[in-house]
Length: 229
Image 1: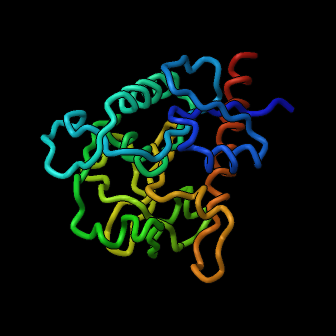
Image 2 (image 1 turned 30 degrees about the horizontal axis):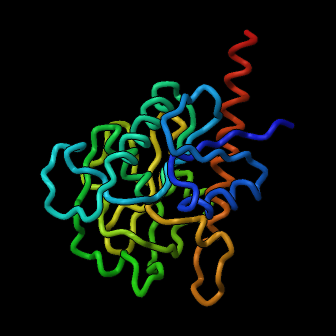
Image 3 (image 1 turned 135 degrees about the horizontal axis):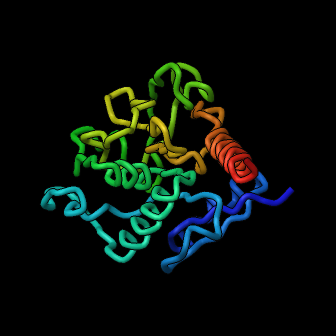
């Protein structure tokens, strides 16, 4: 069986964790540091990264820290291609926020509860979440789970067509999905808890990537059926 081709727009040294998990699940992962065409790939993963330029969602900078305009351009360009083509997309942390912006949403540039969500001493924070019934995350984790966290910004206004699937125990959007397109996002980093630690009692992050790959397989299967009709 041919391997699923996943592309990650980012710097190779920054996305090793994603590659390790996806390749361990049998996917072929390509990391691109320059613009590319979506035609060569089955799906897109938008990774975590620096703060997004707030001008992209109609705001002045009131709380953004480090911004990388070149990476913004690369990742937004990739997202637009895949969304226009209707191909599967998964956004992680900053990637979830980017998806929300692509659909007309915006961000809270510096959340009041950031101390509970950002890095502490160079390590992720951890907190509980609630998950809405009938969502893809509910299929994986039930009513809630404990996740990791490394951000100070969060989804504000929800983009058109997006559904909130998961929220933190203090109200931050932690998971989304599009109502009709194969588009998913999580605010946490499942690749960093792919090997659950008993003392932290976190969710098994591998399940997110397994679900993503299964979604891609279903998408490809349906597309092949349409081609033969």
